[in-house]
Length: 516
Image (cartoon, rainbow, N blue to C red; front, side, top):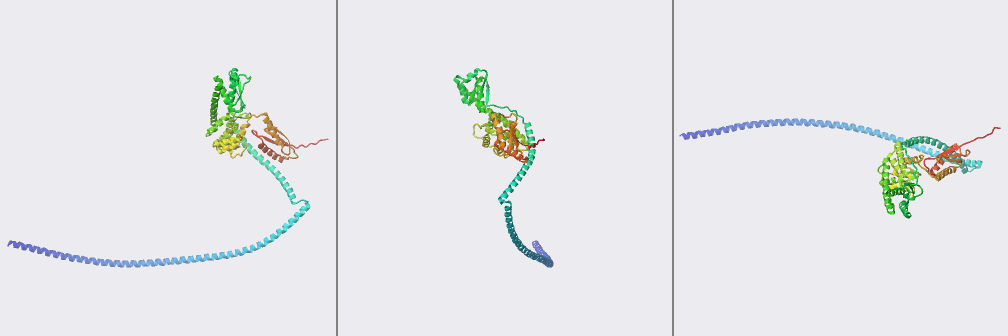
């Protein structure tokens, strides 16, 4: 009985639960349906509002587009009207230009016709003038009894005389002006160069003297049957003069290097005391090596003294060889050093390359080191040596042109030539034989006397000046200027001389009368 009650209770509870769940579900369903209906209603409302708003915006956009199209169309119409009006104006201008061109063409055609007529008239007039000129020329030839060529020659002669007179005036004027300016500048530069470069000059000869300790040494130098002196002369190429001069032997020879080798060898033999052919040969070889080393050292000292560097070693050796070379009694190495210094000073005054001027001045007489071994003048030999050892082109030209054999192509070359003349022209720097001196004076007078109108001439001041007396009836004052100029050019071309030569033309007119 109790079990049944429990079962019944449970069944009732289950039924109640089921019924409650069904009721809850039905209630939830109704609620959900109500919410769905409300949402659908809201969606329809939103969609309707969106459709209305979209329709309004679409209409507004269409209106704006229509307005924009209308505005653009108005602008296009306005631009089109402006372009049409501009084209119309340009077309009008083109038409006006065409009309103007047509008018100008018509005017030019008329002018061309007029010019053709004038040209024809001028041609006819020219022909008439030519005919009249021929008649006048023929009549003039008949009256003057001269042909046209003869009359032309007379006129040309008169013109030449006038030009000759004008030429003399111009030469005198320009020469005075150039001389004044050039002399002033040259005096300044040369005075500065000479003051800053003072050098002593000693005339050297072609002999060397070796002092002996006693006269007994002369016999030992000669040797048995003269074998010692013959050996020494054969090996050195120098003549030994043993005479009555007390305690001295004279070495004579034109090659200064060989003479120096002989002097050194002889001094060594005298100091050693053993004099015989084998010992002489040994001492000569040793003296040759010593002199060569001394020449190289002398060349290097010369480059250091001048301040020139980078010279080829072979040129330095040849430069040292110049120590034993003389020109008119002047030591060539000392002369080259002096020329280098003078050229450098003048280059600094003129503002050109000082080092290049010094280098060219130092090497300008390098050809004299081997001129007794190679044929040709020392100028050509020196230029060839400089080319061989790749010297600067300016240096080569300075070497080749310092005696005027070729044209100077640089200021440095001109300065080297001037410095060479200054160094050679120093009082006591050089000496020349009486024969050469007299020959130069004679040639100087002969050159001056070869000109027409010269009466007499005199070489004075040791050949530094020539005075020319001219005939006053053949040479006037202006022609005297031209004559002096021509004589100077001839002297420069035909004579070799140190320094400069002054040519003075003297024209004197005397009027003589007697009182009775």
